[in-house]
Image (cartoon, rainbow, N blue to C red; front, side, top):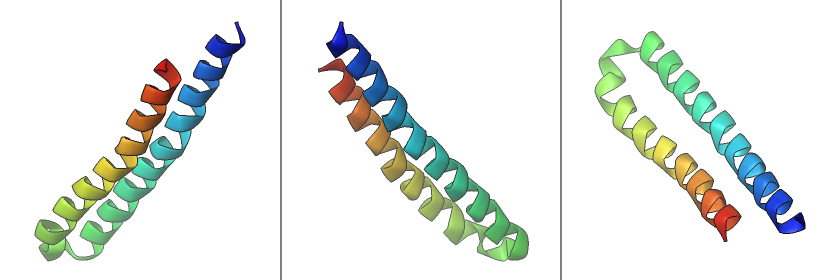
Length: 67
């Protein structure tokens, strides 16, 4: 019983941080594109890589929750 609850807590907390991080990354990228639309070709790939790194943390916590 405690293991199931612990897995749920790990999954919930492990998804909370990356969810906030991805939101902040997207917001700041859109803000930067709004200020300088010509730089969108350089901003979008960096944003996608940063979101990938943030989502990797959520995937790791999901794997640990299943273990």
